[in-house]
Image (cartoon, rainbow, N blue to C red; front, side, top):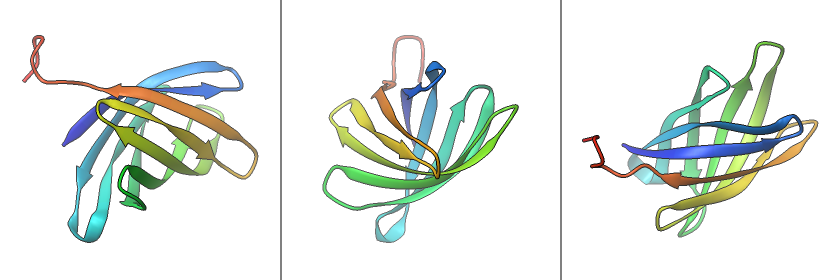
Amino acid sequence: MEEYRIVLESQLGPREGTLQLEGGKEGEVSGWITLVGEKNAVQGRWIGAHLLQLFHHLRTQVSDLECVSVLKLEGDTLSGTLQNEKNTMLWHGEKITAGKGGE
């Protein structure tokens, strides 16, 4: 499983969290986005050499948004967009590496 420290540039300011991804068969991936204290399941697939499309909800204390994110993963960095029926927001982040007190 790979883990990334992520930031969503929302209309209310930056929201920090984590993204955990595990590759599956046929280019499919699954995992979790943890943001604003909520853990949201993600399902997705590779749509290019470095492009990943994820389908997920984004739950907060006041809403539950159905979202599609497209992420570009290059080296240890991540960037992309989140879209829902109302907004488009930007993602950015970096891979959390093993060591430095971790496994």
